[in-house]
Amino acid sequence: MTVGFGSDHAGIELKLYMMKHLEEKGYTCVDYGNYDPNDRGDDYPEPGRKVAEAIRAGECEKGVLICGTGLGISLAANKVPGIRAAVCSEPFTASMAVRHNNCQIIAFGARVVGRELATMIVDTFFGCEFEGGRHAKRVDMIMQIEKDYGKTE
Ligand code: RB5
Image (cartoon, rainbow, N blue to C red; front, side, top):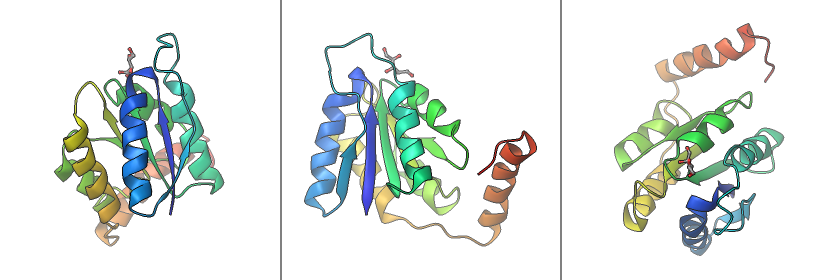
């Protein structure tokens, strides 16, 4: 599986750590930026958008986004039609993000979770599968909102 990674300056160190972790497990990891941890003027919407667009384009199947809180970068990703990105600070929510919400992207904050917790969140996210059934109808209802506002998937 190919996984797209994105972060702003706040998340670069944790992003590189998580990329190495997943590569050791056999995943192909692609870094969509940002790249300079000292550039405090960089902007989280750009990598959030790039990873979401890579998933939409079929370059990646899933994504991992990290900023200070996980909020800004996930909000940007969620603006790309067809994308569902979930901010998670613990593994239970990360499992539900896949099992019930069929999210393609997991996001978290480098200023919120440490390496060990981030690893548990990521391993949980990649270890779960969408359950479909009644959850598929609800995810379809979420995506219908985009369609109702004129966005195409
Ligand atoms: C950057 O200082 C910070 O605002 C950003 O990483 C993120 O937490 C935004 O949601």
